[in-house]
Length: 326
Ligand code: NCD
Image 1 (cartoon, rainbow, N blue to C red):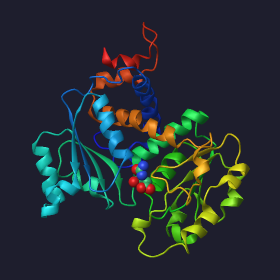
Image 2: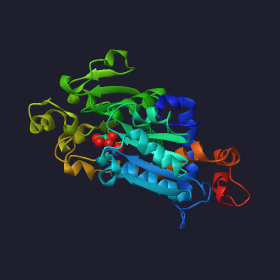
Image 3: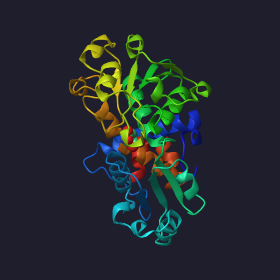
Image 4: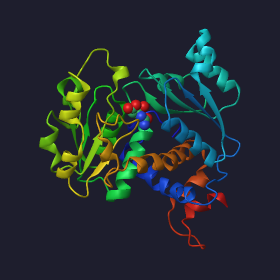
């Protein structure tokens, strides 16, 4: 595989393999020196045209833990402000000898477009309302870690589905792995084409909460909303926010997830974040090894990959994958 642009690029088997590969990198991340030389000599550039805290830091940390060199491109201090095009920017970065570009852009399709201008690998770190595949991978990894498998789980994706690339990638990954997904939102925050999606929809969170295994909350993405799509944030919080009262009706082994950044008091009440069922910090923690696995899959050598894929213990009792640092 050369690029990771969407969840469909991986398919169900590809996701399962990537999650298994991630186990090796979780083990490496737990070591006192969480670094292996498998991408030594490779250069990864992050090209973020949109704001980000966790995705960018997570990719850059992942690349460094694999011993790749990292170039960080910040739009606010670049020649894009002098009118340089995305294509010229990409070709300039390529001329410096870069092996992979991690791209976030406000328009759907830009990472795909960049593949025709750039020889190396392109990873989509979020494009418009379209996809955010590594978010879906770290979320499926987190669910698998807590619940063993996604098969048969009932997942609610709640909130601003319309503007959410996370909702699109996650819905696809979750259903591919056997979960059933219900999108819960006011009509104005659901896209018009959900009939062709493998999901159910609801406007009533309280009616769905009782038998949910996962409640996945989305941020209200006001920067993407041209008109007011909810009467007020307070009313939205009353009808769709996860608060202490709703938590009391959730099953004791349900999980609450959020991709961040959270709007406390809107989609999630501050005390819900402290509930042991809320696994937001696990999601962030798992982001690094999941992205190590993605970078390794795209840039690592096949012999390393074969070794890392095998989770069997070696003669030292460690998983074989951990010997990629040998
Ligand atoms: C999301 C994004 O930017 O797509 N955040 C993230 O990557 N963790 C979701 C959001 O902005 O609401």
